[in-house]
Length: 184
Image (cartoon, rainbow, N blue to C red; front, top):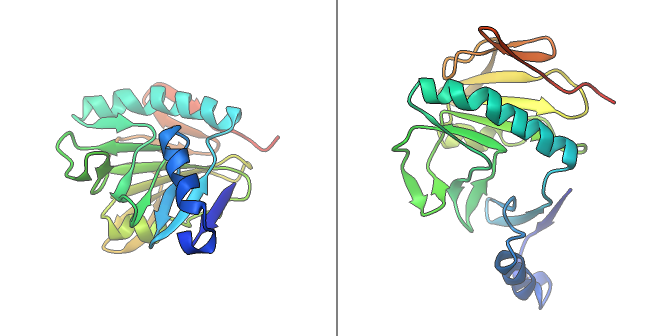
């Protein structure tokens, strides 16, 4: 679930509520979309379990290529325009826009929760020069891997960044296989 708040002027105590969320660590997944603050709830249990499996699958692939995996990660500029992908694969020396925000990523993974719009963050990731985007839908639609060419995204079957392929219902890298969720 996402709650969008356009301005602290909309509610007199909103600035206090946001400061309280930050102080309590409840803002980990919150995002700014072109200056609009979006309150994002944390992942469901099913989402969290998939994230652990993705980290176990993708982490070693990243390390073999001299890359780092982070989950969650932050890309963009805090309090202006930023997104929080569920997992990002980064160069170790990826520039930061502030102590916790990256300027780009090699690959981002978005696990869509029910109600999220597929591809909603693609324009943002293209503007921030993310190379690849892996989207996994918890509602059981097929996973999709996209590669950026200039500011366009193209569907691809194999990751140039990590070398895995997206097959029907699974990610595959050599003998390793991660079965993806199907609609329950």
